[in-house]
Amino acid sequence: MTLDKNWYTEKWQGQGAAISLRVTDKIHDEQTDYQRIEIYETESFGRLMTLDGLVMVTDRDNFIYHEMMTHPAILTHPSPKKVLIIGGGDCGALKEVLKHKNVVQADQVELDEGVTRTSEKYFPDLCSSNKDPRARLIFDDGIKWVQQSKASSYDVIIIDSTDPVGPAAGLFEHEFYRACYDTLTNDGILIAQSESPLFHDALIKSIRQNMNNARFQALATLLFPQCTYPSGWWSATLASKGYINKPRTCDVETRYYSSDIHVSAQILPPFLRQKLK
Ligand code: AG3
Image 1 (cartoon, rainbow, N blue to C red):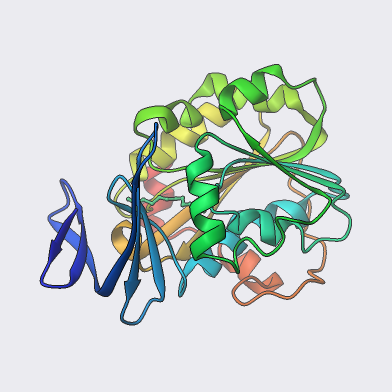
Image 2: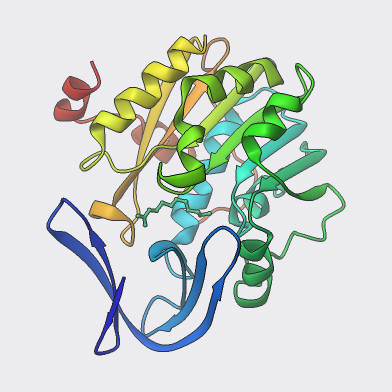
């Protein structure tokens, strides 16, 4: 991370590219036991949260990511009652999940409580459902949580992780997906953020292989724009224990997700289809 003449820059190492946002102020800087959390005011993207120098959330574009990480999975499940969010400490995914009335319990298991406390202070909109009685905010290791959960205890698992480095690396592995498989009910759906289709196609391939090896029957990688993440183009990979049902009609308010987007997001361009073979 460099702050150069009021520009915040995340350099995409190895890609010879970067994202820059003009910032007007730095309003928070904290080193927790796990990572460095920084909050900036930007000129045109609202507030920005970075973890160890990597862009996590901006006010302006997080809705695309959070809607695509949640509604496709929730609406693919016939009747999702219990939802588990791994990571997601900013609470943006939790807010989207709780829009669905059939969800009776949403557990968010985030390793670093500092992320959630910081988000409550600087991203009140993302945290607007934290007091919902269906929400449980748990600060613990997500891998351990899934390993210790009873079989068939969740209908949907959402893995809203950071990049596969440090403690998050295990969230991309076959052993973890296997534990998720066991923790899911028979109709269970898993969705994981799976990085950039342009920069990280090999990783997407390995995520898909790991999910298959963990016995998930059907997979779908969904593509969507996320202009402040590496390459500006992002993905989420959905896995089902059975078939992938046609999604139920969306009856909650969204700004990016729609039934048509759900279909179009699954159409992979030829180069990616080739890479993922
Ligand atoms: N989770 C995905 C962050 C990955 C971004 N990578 C990067 N900037 N290099 C974000 C958490 C949002 N709830």
